[in-house]
Length: 282
Image (cartoon, rainbow, N blue to C red):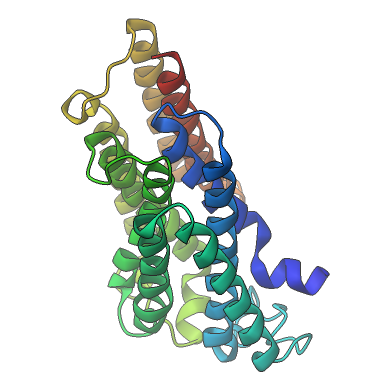
């Protein structure tokens, strides 16, 4: 069981499902069977694509200390068995999403294309692989939104998808500050080939600021917040930018990158909860 848990990266798969739930509840819909199908479908697809990714990258994973203990490179499970598990998970997830309609199913399958057929092969060729990689994170909220029966191009749905896309970029680059050289030695392309640590930190910080500023464009996407909630949104953005700058440039501890990584993930979760809360009281 431990091998399967690590192979499917359950915590990451659950986070993806929670992201999809944000899109669902953002519509103001109540929990129904469609929510359960959506959550399970997204979870199985995320787990299946994660397993498939490890099948594709097992040789490079074996070259990095961070990933050498994963089930396939460590010899705990064979590639054929892992491939079978991936097929079963992806098939199950696709079936569950299909019961909510062809659009949620198509969105789920599009993530396999983005993640396993574009992002994964491109990682060894260009640091710009991060673009299709970030698109992968933008899709789950749209799956949740359409599973509730709402129009995919509604401005509210696009707002959340764009926010998640923007948030993913510094999320990835923070990892490159810590593991960039290790990725390069395994044959992956990394932004650390072109920029030193301080330069990457600056890029990450300014991108984080852009992500924060984007949230203030909510009126253009049809959102309406009570004055108290607008004040709260401004407050969490100021706090995020202040702490992000502090961790990246003024904190001299060995855990500064980890702190920044935790902060940006916490920030996204708070934004999700904020948007869902607003939808529920509207």
